[in-house]
Length: 403
Image (cartoon, rainbow, N blue to C red; front, top):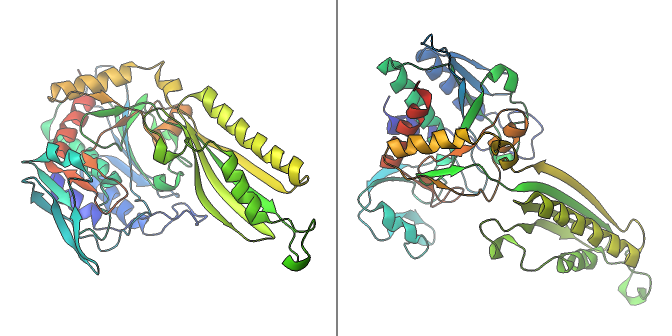
């Protein structure tokens, strides 16, 4: 099957993960695509299986007697819940420049504007895969899945020499659980690459250190007419807490290596209020300082309003994989060399987020991230470039073959 036909088939399967689910995979529909992928891997001659958690594993034995390292490739099957994944109408267009009319909704035309996405100019003359603007595309990360399987298919057909290759397609990456049940020992690779990045040429081995904070505020409700010195307004205290955090250290005012506090949810009334935060920083020291500041903010409010008024549940999510990759930089060198051999100048960029590779690196599997040729992930304006996806396949094959 050709790369683009394969990709268009994959995106036709809705696979949104569900953060409110307690099962793995978090949504049953991910298993439908998992079975398709398992059958494709088996047809290529890999030993393929789906485990009890919905992870698809495939293993291609070495076809050389030369002693080689064992390499892995990983991508995720699920899609973000930011935009609908159902009824995706994907199509390929030849981009001639300017704004792109994707489709229509009740408000009129849905347009991807160059004023919003000026980097569209870089794709003029190329073929783009877009939607009708009412759903996401699913290139994050079905582009990575399609590229890995296409690279395997072309490698097997070519008969070129390679060492053992392990692949895994994971569920639930978008809700931070993609590595929860990953079997590193059985995967049996010396290192791996997640193929889950964006623009062609990007190599990522730095990501945020991440934590989540859940805050509960307990108030006292009483008739406002007799509330003086009696009422404790939990909703007002929640607002006060938010106002005590650095106002410019938020996602909308930071970039690159700059960290932030991000208020992701807030609800409350007089008797009870809740706030949810994510805390991010590339630097481990600054990350610990951010958590310390959150704890101190809660302590100040409890000193002001009484012990137990504000409670904090602070939990680390993942750490910067650079701590692990720094001792294995040859993995990055190999990826950059493969890109240059394919005529692509690599660019190392910090991930302003997380990846399965971060957790896997700390689980004993060094695992940086490679580009897929897609952009605008998690939005109605997501797209993938056909020519760049094909180049990604060539890069993956370079990494698979024996030098």
